[in-house]
Image 1 (cartoon, rainbow, N blue to C red):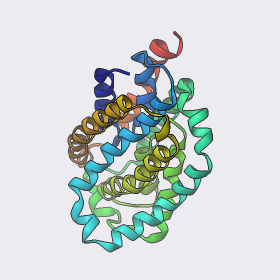
Image 2: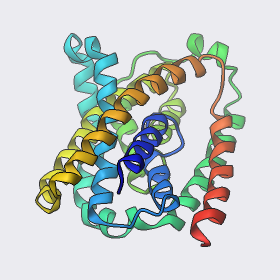
Image 3: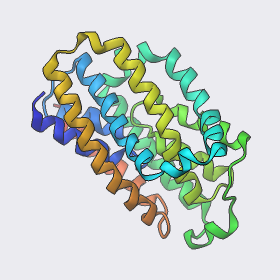
Image 4: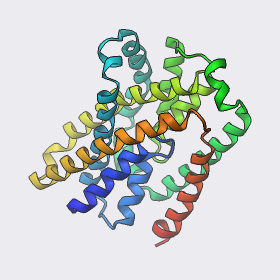
Length: 260
């Protein structure tokens, strides 16, 4: 991997981490599009730079982390299902799922269809959502959102997409569940990155740690801009656009990457 490739992957991660389009799926397919050889380092790199994007949440939402114990408790309750499922499926994830471009393509297509159908079925006007739906999650809802997030163990599913749809199905306000998805990403990706580095760090060279740092920093700054844009977007739009995008992206990746 070159420095330019690390920067490109950092940008892709920063843009896609909090959008319902699957950052992991985009990283896998972009890596193949750039001709980066599949390796344990690449898989760890894809996990680690996601944590760079996640730290942007801590930077933007530090007051909610430091001064609101109730938020922390609910985030930790939601984190438990992903922690258990992720720990049990770690070997399968790294050995089979993170290298499967065709699985990512199918996940993007199916997830796109689900987003479109869900929003058409939902039928609540965006401008009325803030008035009609709950703005505070219960502990039960937090746990169920965490279960929904666990679906993202499959590359291409989208962690944010799964949590947001799960929250909306339970009657949570759109902006509230989007922000909760941001907060939930912190322990989820911190645990994933820490566990992976603990398992794999001994196999990296010094130059590879240099690439990790570059991707990490780039994803951090790009993700901050992406978060601000998404919060503005959800005030006046549904996620149908992202559903259409997922399908188009899957088709492009299929013909440009998978079939080659």
